[in-house]
Image (cartoon, rainbow, N blue to C red):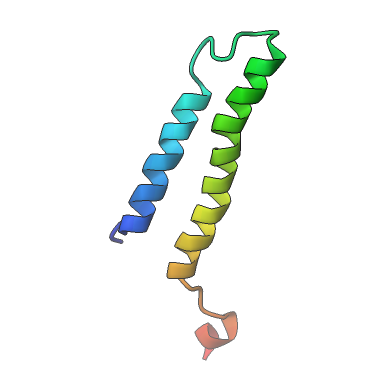
Length: 71
């Protein structure tokens, strides 16, 4: 199966935000403001990328109905 351009962009963007989310020491522990900013800049884009990316990629690969498969 060939990897499409959409899948590659989705994979790279998800990996980038995952790495940014897991940087050690960012945000500083016990700093609520830093954790909020970190969450907005990394967690929210990760959620958006996952759900929007899955919707886009799965729309390219339409699944056949089970009834069609049996016939």
